Length: 413
Ligand SMILES: *Cc1c(COP(=O)(O)O)cnc(C)c1O
Image (cartoon, rainbow, N blue to C red):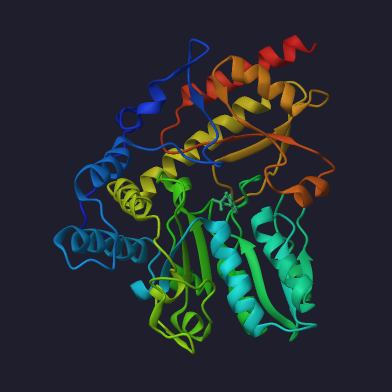
């Protein structure tokens, strides 16, 4: 894919200059932002693209005959091409714009699930899923009487493949799993897990929220049936996400929401539906958000992805080393194959108390259950502290975190 593409060399101090928020101070201290797994900060290019669109090019799309509307439509549809390239989809029609990953999963549960699953059919989740990849399936279970099975994980936070294999039977119709855990950072062997599911005749939805910012995605190589991610975690705006689906599946699925744009012809007796992708994009979409997402993908693509990965991997290794030096700090999630997301607990100190002290130092970390309560239960915890790194983080950020944690220790000693 890269081939002739010219990439800028990855230089973290230059990258930081692109993110205006990183110049902010919090309680008079420089912001140390370690919560990109919840939502990533935005480069100036994304902010400017959205502002410029509203200032100079805004109009509704797919409707107007006038120049502005045609150009807005063109810009919006161009982003679909960028998304298709970003995940290596076979065609642009397979890439649908939704509000966020959560909406993408609900769309699959409500459209595909309601149509193709029936009572007694089984779906498999893993123990490390985000609530967004649990609750939509439970809602479907209420309605259709399907059965949800859960593939367990090890103490290290890796999926137990033997147990997963044993759960796959001819009753399994769907597997829905994270590509990377938002709590543990575990990178799941999704390609292998998809192949196993396919052997059993099941379809697979991959929740790629944490993968999209960290590793290259190739939906064809993975052979994923559905793949979702959120724009705001790949340095893009909030309010826009992507649902990828294989064409034959999306074509067989009924529309989820009805309204403008998704129709071909409406009479009070009968309505016929538009073709892909419009069939699934009812109503005026987040036009500026989609255009901002395009700028975010351009931002990422200006670098060689391997250099971003190497940078983040270096941060992870450095952070693990620094955190190991802190008294009574226990890492939660020590998978061999791991992205730059670290969860930990400090023995008797409540994560929220630690988070409050770190905040006083200008350090933004996430504390709580991270929308993964079943995973917390698996580790016998209510909450963890989570530090997650994006492409703009530095070893200096890690050092400030380590110092902040030492201070926290001292206060509670
Ligand atoms: C953030 C996240 C979600 C939910 O994303 P939204 O943008 O809130 O819809 C789902 N799964 C994982 C793994 C996540 O990290």
